Amino acid sequence: MKRATSAERGPVRTRRSGVFMETLPPPPAPLPRFEVEVPPPDLSAWREGNCGIPGVMHFESRRVGPHVVVVCLIHGNEYTGAIVMDELLRARIRPGSGRLSVIFANMAALAQFDPDHPVASRFIDEDMNRVWSEDTLHGTRSSHELDRARQILPVIHTADILIDLHSMLWPGRPLVLSGRAPRGVTLARQIGATKLIVADDGHADGTRLIDFARFSSPRTQARACLLEAGQHWQAQTLQTARRAVRAVLRPSCFVAADTAGREGRETAQCMMVTDLVRAHSSRFAFVAPFRGGDIIARRGTLLARDGDDEIRTPYDDCMLVMPNLRPGRGQTALRLARRATPTTDGSFPRPTP
Ligand SMILES: [Zn+2]
Image (cartoon, rainbow, N blue to C red; front, top):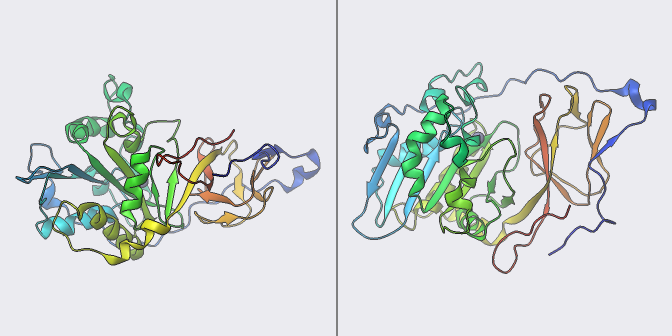
């Protein structure tokens, strides 16, 4: 395991001197037009669900086995995972052992999808992937997404293995977010559909589903991963989601093996998030159209300007995790990751400050 020493690590953000003030970047441009290669699915067959919870399909085998839960549409406009599950449900997928649940998390947001404004239907009221703390779930606040999270909570509470299917707005390498626990990393390797596993500690502005206590507490064995299958609405992303889902379902359900999914298991690159860069101004601008998964060889390389600040790589071989090429003020613009070797128990080490 290689840890950064203070000699190897530089600052991420530095304040520029006044000499450069005239080179401040212009205000961010509006979002480009994103191509929608794959149209949204018709999920009306699953709207009622079959177990008393709308949008949840649940099946039980007579043989003992884990409860596998596939979640799609946590973000309403990220529907490639929903297409995969619609295909499998229409093919009458059933567990050979244990239980299988398929959750279409936010059909109401998907119903608002407009190919002319495809970014707008991510959620109705709030990000459904930031509400999974006990305090939030059991608090008094109400929103469409929070109420829906409470509705599907009984299924989440009994999940043994969970995969949460997402895609990305900006171009980048597909990846699996594993969390830092060994069991999440093990599941990420099993998924194998991407060659990139990224471990992190979640987001300060709310708890993700994969960080829900059931999947992150040392007192349980349930495991969860989040798949970022590629860019939204792209055919290639659909293929990656298919491979990942089949890898997760194959041990307990009757689905054909997908040999293409195996290759990532041994060769997956494991990266650990070390830094989060938030846009402090409304003038945050990258100096190049970076893609998620890009690895910047040299420490100190200029990545972006943010008002009077410069953002640079703090160490050599620094990977850019899902850069947001148009961050609003206060939003996450970028996360940085370095190669990490899981420790002997399979967990990722904590980043060195
Ligand atoms: Zn998402």
